[in-house]
Image (tube, rainbow, N blue to C red):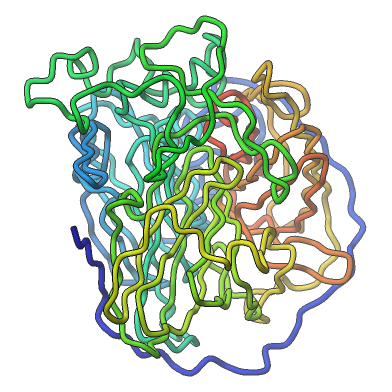
Length: 573
């Protein structure tokens, strides 16, 4: 089957040459520890005795005056239903509008986005706008920035979008992210400096929902051995079931899985046509779940510093399709193509390469960088990279290797005649020059953080281990009453120490930070891979008042407790 995606040709202004390097040495900073909040969490507009800005407070209004840009209206419905992943494989999941990925939302920097979410799920949900420096009460964190949207209700998200770039949106409720509710948010630059002919949005995913009756909540229960979740709650069995009776075998619309059978517990396939597994399911202690065992052992990656992950996903996807029934992007030889690559996965990093091509990285997490040539790149959960390629003549695999897990996803670039590559095709570029960390990148001068001495130092330590699955920060799980305080207008230096034996993608809401290096301020990011027993030093300007989450974007780590809150101090009248 030929699943073709194509955009109309687009010509952009010529890429400016001679981008200047922006550098500054590391700066000293003063220290600040965490504080414990008084009173109930998450009241969006009430006076707060804890002394910090609330999401709907006047400080937020002052920082985000009434938008004046054009209003772009959308309506999205979160709904349960069948999802077809390719080669006849259909499973039940939750999506936006029944689509996987959800339909693209595209606006221009400075526009006002108005999106109404209609919740047709059996459980509560929210939408988080990943990477956007939006007003705090639109950030989509249940019990912190807004009440969750109940089944049958709607919520109106409305905010100005200040920065161009590649973004996306997804729930911030329990482990709902590991279902099918995600979509790209593309913010165009009205003065776009890049020149290209086509644009290809590439969304990567690891898929488990509905396979053999599995749900992400089953997986979390296995990982935590029945211990309660410590994050922002979600769609556990007592709150509703994704598929209702269908998960228990009573499928009124017929079998939803190819072949009509449930998934075997061992081994778990990893997306290869030859059936080679992504790993063998471990034998965990008893857990309170319904689906088959989905834990894996032996997932290792030198690029990720050792242990790569704990979940054996049956399938890996590019734009909602498996490697044996891939999407195809059509262009002409010589065309210049901008790929916007988004990792929407729950627990898997991907190593990405386009067979027969080198790529030029132009943006990371939406912000421009000095052009960087590479054969392949590693992209952690929730990271985004924009790259340019000049298409050759033929048929080429765009392969996303599930790093350390051996499975892979694939899409196809077609500029001429030829057969579709085999699903197990592994381009040589995957093993050549690989960009693993954005620390190797330097910002475009337009995105470089201005030099300034930090006013505050916030130091946190990521803790926990795979065996106990007791992920946390500073040796304790997420506590909504614990905050790290900042003052509006400060330059904040954030030091995150990974004291665990596993890598973590570290995400900060509502801000972008500059990765600090020895000789310069680095690329602007909102999510970064942090390797085991390494530290991340990042600077950001505290210019967006409110309550903002800082967490690991491995959804099972964050829901197990690896998150905390950054809070702006409220100035009393």
